[in-house]
Image 1 (tube, rainbow, N blue to C red):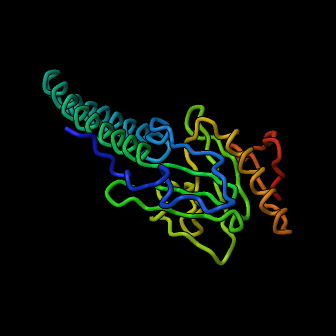
Image 2: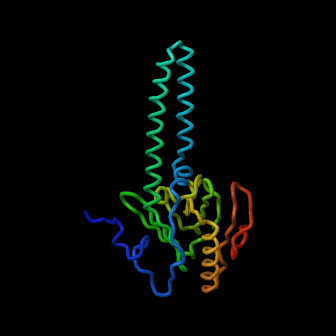
Image 3: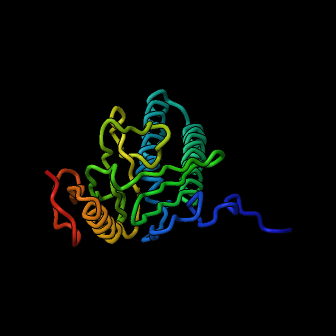
Length: 224
């Protein structure tokens, strides 16, 4: 049987066409699926929810005088349902991570993501107003991007490559990157060079984690 690649039509993985003359590929990467499962698919919260349900039902059954065997069987059924739910979410996270490619060039950021119907978002560097380097699950990190108004991207089109909690003003996000600080440094340099070539003020980049600030990558500027 021959191997089949759903994205074999892409001249460069993650890009719908060859780069134009004068545009250079700087970096490509994908989310870590375990971190994506935690931060985007909330597998820990789902597991905790089922544990609470098991404990509550077990306590209720004990108070009603049910036998230990009956309580155990009921707990095992609920735990099995919970494991299936967590397994499905982990599978979705793995598939989304596998099908997502982030691309940074000297002119733009490209996000290719999706399962049945992959979507490619081209975001020129000239449209990026600010960027924030944020900590994700575990050691992973993400880079949230603020798009200059009146430009706007729909949250459902972006998800799961969207900053959590920003439904009314969606922000594209390169999520769950293993080398997020390195990518932020490359992005800062690209933004400065692109702005310098066009005589614009470069976009601002900050490094934050749950509201705190920390040293920024080389070439980055502090956010206002």
